Image (cartoon, rainbow, N blue to C red; front, side, top):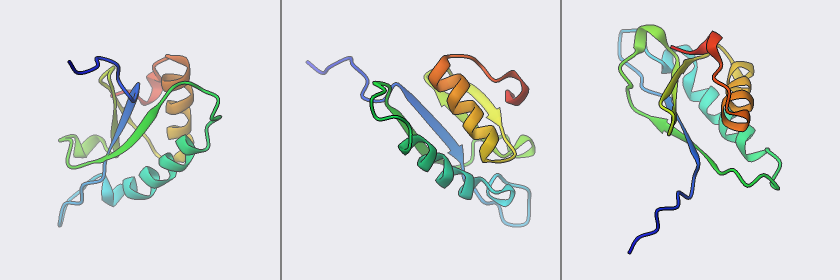
Length: 105
C-alpha cells in the first residue's frame, strides 16, 4: 500500500511560459525569478523539517496578472515583481503559514 505521507509539504509553481508576440510571465522576468527562488529555498536552514519544491510550470492562464506563481497544497495564487516579493511569500506563507495579501491574486 502506498504511503500517504507527502515528501514535499509545499510546491511553488512558477509560470515560465513565453508567448510569442504577447504578454507572458516569461516576458516579465519569471524565468530568472524562478531560478532565484530555487536558490532561496536551497539556502534555507537545513535543520527545518519542512520540504519545499520549486517548480517551473507552463501557462497558468493568468498572463495579464503576471508574473504568477501558485502555492500548493493551499492553492494560493500570487503575483510578484522581484525576488524580494518571492522571499516574502516563502517566509510568510511557506514558513509561517500566513497568506501575503498584498501579493495575492
